[in-house]
Length: 132
Length: 62
Image (cartoon, each protein chain N blue to C red):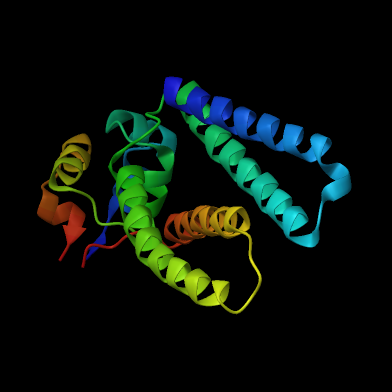
């Protein structure tokens, strides 16, 4: 129960910070900022979905985590870390060719890592894990 | 590796929810097991076999 509530708290904080950023600089927004904002909203939506799934499990009297969910999380972390390395290499390659501000580059990299994690989690949650 | 969890669950008139609670896992894990998308740990295999009062070899086909 506690763990699922933490997900909601973190998602709320991210949404609050992003909302503040959005309302204080709404006139200075460029396409990249809008893209960042869209991806952050998508990630928060994903976190709320995971949190509500955990909460419904807890309400049904089932454990929030079990051996399969832990294994999926471990495999997701390993794969997304591996992919993230290539993302950073690609962004460094891109940095010299496209005009990027450092904050933009870091923001894009971090968001890309989060998106990779989310997509990997969805794939393993759909495909399952076979230890063959 | 395949398993006969669905067959034994039907024989014991258990829902996926009930079986999940008996072996202390989420209902999704039972769904994954029945669809052969996940090979359980030895402990979970033992717990499942105990619920159905069969051996692990009877429940899982190697």
